[in-house]
Length: 190
Image (cartoon, rainbow, N blue to C red; front, side, top):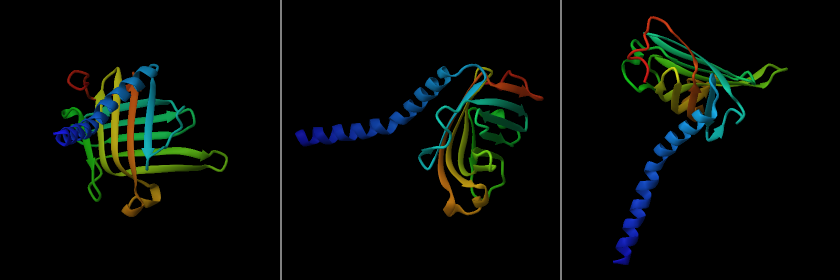
């Protein structure tokens, strides 16, 4: 009987640990959002498990949205750059918006991650997303949240899958600068 209780307890512990990351993500998003001032964005990006941007990086965000595209261009105080782009017709028809990138598919969106390593020598490091998912979790005047999971390649290794690295990202904006072109707020924001 004790063995059965031990097995059941172990199985329950495994299942509860499997479901906790979703709660952690929501908690992390709320915590990040509450730490920001209006117009600020935090981009926590991990490439092969290592944080790409310094913890003190705070980005400004410029979003432009049309019926056929969504583009967020972000810069931090260190001149790092992050660009999120959806280029699909009526991208906003589904909420949350989820873009799946697969090797060899027509490009319907992209994620570009870059930073300066040596300003004097004009050396930087940059990656493009090659496969995976980009999800627009929230989009309103108050908040924009993008979650990313997949693979990235350096610019010169985009077509070399064996050189791709894993990427996970949470990008949270508080009251981002947003321009709507031929779109109305009603039915768009969520």
